[in-house]
Image (cartoon, rainbow, N blue to C red; front, side):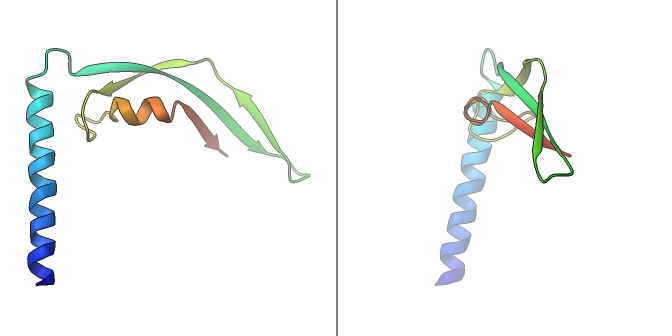
Amino acid sequence: MKSRIASMVLLTVVLVYFGDFLALRFRHEPLGTVTVQRYDAIPEKNNKVEFQFEQPVAQTCVHSLFPHRGYPPCWYLSRHSEQRIDY
């Protein structure tokens, strides 16, 4: 019973991913851009962190549910438009 449920869930995920891929392939403009603010978090000796902000950059994303072509989905990137880089 458990293996049957697991196989049904796996099949559903594969079908949704394949449908998302086909929708992206036939979309007129599959790629978009989101402005991302990156900043560096540099630890100091006194257990404090110094932040250095970079210029905002436009990052390429795909209009889909899942990541494709090496780009993150636009819905995810727009919700995570601040990117912290820890050193």
